Length: 285
Image (cartoon, rainbow, N blue to C red; front, side, top):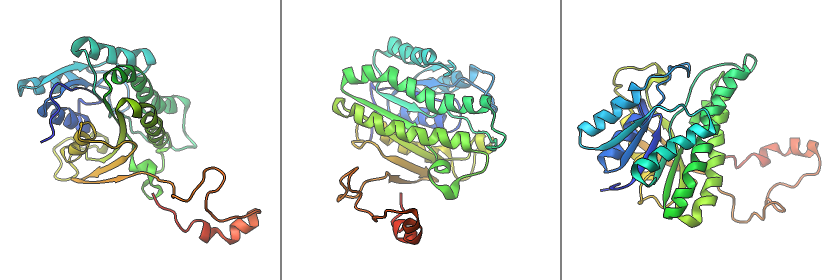
């Protein structure tokens, strides 16, 4: 059985839905959990400290170790304060799971600066500043697990939805962050992966316990990525309805990047047009 005894985990957005399922499962397996949730409404505004506190209380009632934080992750300083509070309380940090997110629709034609800024803040800036704050201690420990959150809505064009440009950009950005952090942390035993989850939560306007696509069916994937048993880095774990598949783009072995892509040679756009079917024949992820 995978155990996380004496490991310390920060889980953002863990007062509801997927994050709460992650927090409960990690606590059940022995982790000391920082339940973070600012308690914002569906529009991404407001605050409610009881959202995080209720999950932390529930974990403690079941014999686990958990504390709550409702800091708004809207600045580098606030992200750093969450990490510093964790270190002050537990004197280590082993696991960072950035689950907090915001889903709202605005077409590219109607996209406003405030709307885009809010999406960038939680999906790009927050995981970046949290990782920056967490890495020094993880490097000192020669151990760390970071789990970011992406989305099939961003990765696969066939699942894209109109109005989700701001959301999709942020979720794709976390893949780029994952790839770089995986390189930067490799020598110090820090592994970085991403989860691409599907679950019926508040973002689906689902308030009651769903019969399928339950958050608890995604949580085992996050537990694995956050555990010592995970020895891979730079993977996207797609998780839905109790099923899991790991994906990542891998270059062909005969490529000498960037001089030789082992690909179709062409000197004109007209030639590309003629040979497009050949050029696009191996499209896959």
